[in-house]
Length: 390
Length: 186
Image (tube, rainbow over all chains, first blue to last red; front, side, top):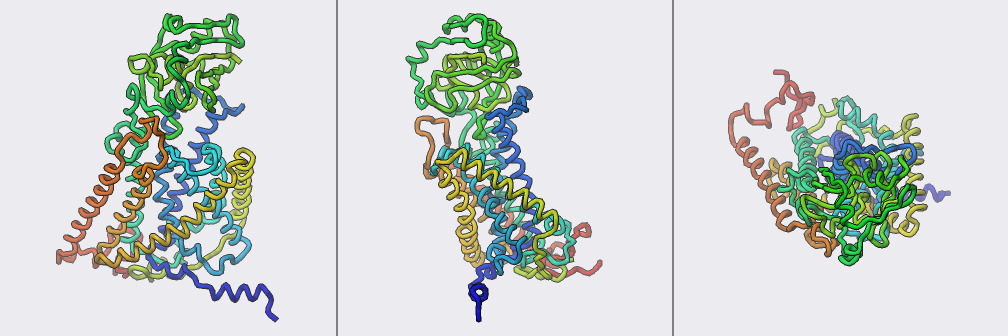
């Protein structure tokens, strides 16, 4: 008597195996090992730099994010985006090379093999999810029903879990294959000629390089001329600097700006309400700091305004406290931000009134915005009208 | 060495053996990895409940799209294109095709004006159609130069420059030549 399991086995054995039709020489274990190693590096870099960006925006008690070096975030987030974009051709090539394994028969050979395969779903699904959503976020295209920063962040954990398991499953094979001392030839059925292997790996590197050169000019200024596919140009915008949110979309009108005053309150000796002329009459300082967007573009600029620490001293603020900044902007996740004591004390942390030699344009946060070193653009609050010592 | 018995082109590996996963290091990383995956799924569920279904669709859809759409399409394009060009030129043509597809897919939303912020001209300020054409043209110019270089080398009768029969440099650890033969010691 045949059991259901036996019948299922017979059916499975009869089913066509699309994997056997992949006859390209590129289904070669050493190519897979090389691409896998490269992806292991790029995804780890992406995860680490992404985590840095997350921790700055969602501070944790045990870490004081330093104000120096001033351009660190610019580099780390630039690397995050550039590495992610460079990973796109790597992922496509890797999946192509190992495609016959997707159709492997029998589909599951042992408990361990089943576990390995199940954990490929979070790895591959997570990787594609992160690259697609991250790229489309830089294009400002959101054809989905989730909040981008939250879903991107949690998907990164899903992907990295899959990556940990995959490294554990494949590290030995990858090492043997790259060291060329695997007598079996590995898990894939083909063996590419050295020329084919070099040309293919070269073309993947060329694809990654082409995408990088075509986009990295949005943060690395010397490349801006050749970065023909960059979503931003660091020189294009009001006063020569790009913006992420216009005054219009933030519902900040010229009338609101006209009626602006700056209020300093909270744990202070003297509550202050200053007009624009009052703020202009205070000692002005200059700082050259980048605007570094989470979306990977950045641009350096010259800012002029009042040091936040001078302002706090003027109000006789309690030292060492968090500073809460609020904006004229209505209803937005980014209408306020918190400045840690170490950042508030930095001489380059300004309530800026001028950008590149002229008063702030309304889209850059006129009449007064925060600019501080080593901080993502979304936390450089624009249209600041309230400083609260908490 | 595995390659010693292999031949040119779509040649089988010597003796492909799937060791299969196992051992303590596999199980430790599998358990840690699964725990991290579970942490991520739980985080998504707790922090983004309204977008959870959509996010899961994109997660699973992304993996399936690669395996069931991108890879078979790539195979189809490769199968067709390979028959249109001489065999010696195929690795170069394939490389240029690959780079072209990467550039085109990346730039597609920019060129077709998907998304963007109409009130903010600093987002996507360039003419991306011109940019894409320039990038693809550059790719094929490089490929053409490589084809020319390899083509000229092939026509030269001098055996010392004919890579098809030449032994690879001694420094190369991979002793198999492109024809899949093991060169004899000089």
